[in-house]
Length: 193
Image (cartoon, rainbow, N blue to C red):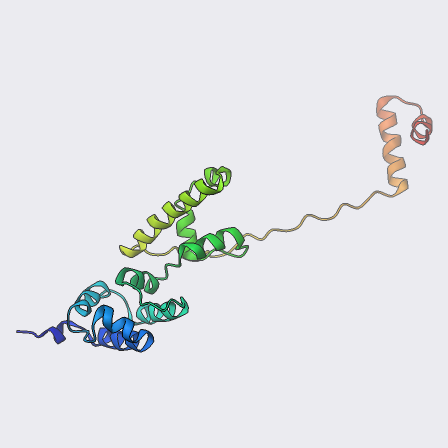
């Protein structure tokens, strides 16, 4: 027969210690001091398929959030999986001129861009929140983030127009006059008038 301590991997015990170090009494009062009991067992199940690198990313994101309260299991799992906050997604969509991050591309794939661009602010926010929720659920259920683009199409700025020289203008005016059947010299006097 196995004991509760055997049900909790060492990495979850290490996570428990790190979170207690970060959040102190707020962590232990919310989730307990022992990772082998109660909430620790639930967290172990909820984080079982994540890698050590993902767990480390979650701790980093939790600290970076500057929230003095410890995250819930779903919130921490989303941090581990690289799901940014809705506010960050909205900011990147509004102000990001560079290549979009993988999760933002996932969100954007779930929005009708035509309707979004024409919606009032409230409706656009609702559309974005719905697409965010769909993308977050997809990732939380094991879906993968889109791969980075192999390359980007470069946008070349159009060349600045260069005005024609007076000689070239005169030649073209003579060609036009000839086509229209106007006698040479008439167009020059019209242009000067």
